[in-house]
Image (cartoon, rainbow, N blue to C red; front, top):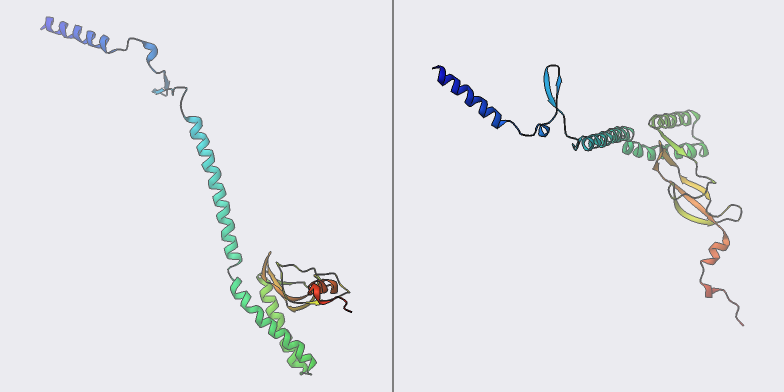
Length: 203
């Protein structure tokens, strides 16, 4: 058996030599870390591309979280908007009733009771950020005012709110209800709207 064993060893050595790569430089570099071999990545890898992609994804996710928090806050902030808008006509009628009561000689106790209810409603809507804004003697603002009519006035600037028919309200930084107003115009501006042929001198 000795000649057979020797022949097997020679065959194994011949097979190992033929299986080994001829050029050792073609092998990837190996490093030993903690008893484990790790292959170094070739210089042309996509690590930078992946890092840039991850950074972009992180930035997009942060923007998404901020937007979601903002939208949630706005939803909570304006959740009662429709209910509060429906309260305003009730407050309007109550305030009109108080004004008429004083003119018509209503009893003082009744007038005090109505005024107390009106204040309670004002405090209630104020707790939700709803407050009236001033319109009288202010320049007309289409974002805040609904013009019901125009009147000729020489004593104020053109397009000035000269009468407030219904108060406007803000809810935080948003217009909850526009004010219904009467707006001034100069008489000359009114004349300019007449038929140009309507005024001439005849014989």
